[in-house]
Length: 328
Image (cartoon, rainbow, N blue to C red; front, side, top):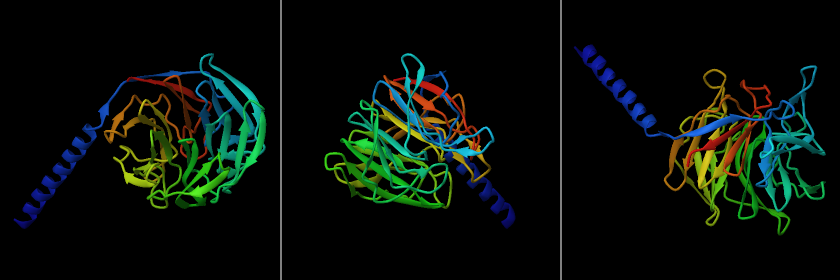
């Protein structure tokens, strides 16, 4: 009789767990949007960096592959004109890089951190490209060398968050560069040390999402930094944990794309989700046409361009350029 009761209790508990999971998943509403495939990136890459000045998209770095099948560190810097659907080679990087942060600020591109060349050797280097002058120069290095970090602009200052200090050593370190003083300062560390994360800015908040650490490659962590108070809070978990993701902000929302996992079999994700910081709520978008990780994303005129990345977990490469026009 005891065995039967235990089996009944176990069955009830399992049913309750399934119901709770179903309810939780059901709370993530589905919203609309249209994907379109556009002119491919000029060469296949992964773990790339991109940003926008509001008119053009700038694309650089990452891993490439030679004709002999060896890893390379492509130096070409490209711009993409979304209105004309045309790519243009505008210069070459002084040094190849992968897993780097890239932002646009005040007419310049800032490449922050990453790994040198085609290695996993983290760097603190900041390289600045003055667009109008077509000129490269070095800025002051970050206090902490790291790759696979998240880099964003908030209130005209550059925030470098998290990343990997060395192979398998994640960090939550948070450092801010102020162009007005040409110097770095420490800020409150992100509570969950991680790398291969993504971040985006809405108002005075920086939303840091997903990523990996020494325990898992599918973190669901969503932590929100308040620029005014220099403090972190916990947001609603990412619906599907993964790493190697891309994120942008648009009209008060944060959009999260793609990713990979190694914990339960290697795979890539075609997931696209939207986070509303004001309501602390996630919504599902139509999935990307192509599942991938190591991708990058940028916004121009209310449309989101999701570029490059690997179709397979680990080292794989693509020239993909997929555009999402989300519903309001």
